[in-house]
Length: 161
Image (cartoon, rainbow, N blue to C red; front, side, top):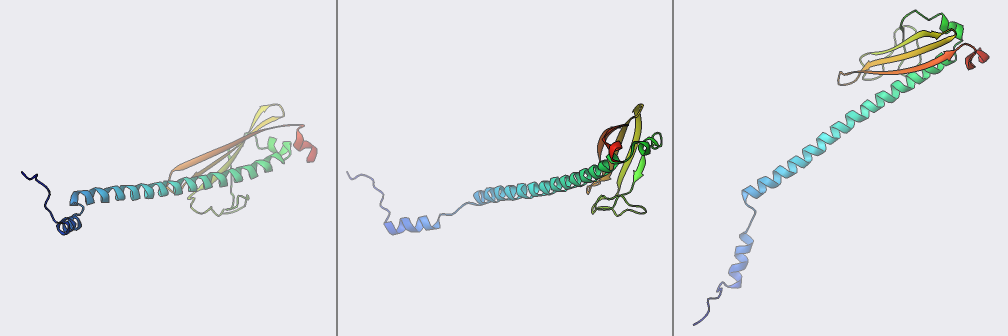
């Protein structure tokens, strides 16, 4: 008895192979995977841009606060003493952080930027100076930053004034 063998001719097998294709389900799964990956990349890019903008704002505010703090440190103690109890003083700054008089130009993207300075007496001849910065970021969220320094009568700044 002859064994049952595959009697398909080689030409017939190659035709069957060339007609084989992906099913609709396989294509849909592949498209969904590609869409998910591309969507994740776009979301990651958007989050990275937001983090970059927030970092840029924080760096700019830090530079403005540092500039103003150096101005405070170079101020004579008797000038600081005259500001005790005056409450928070709003300091207007331009887009580069330099204090100005009149209307201040606001850095790009900031709806409002406020820099306030408060001087308190800690002890006789010893003062605490607080600088508070507040602004609204591009998403409309309020942000704040604060620098604090202590200055004493007879300190370094008295030798230079």
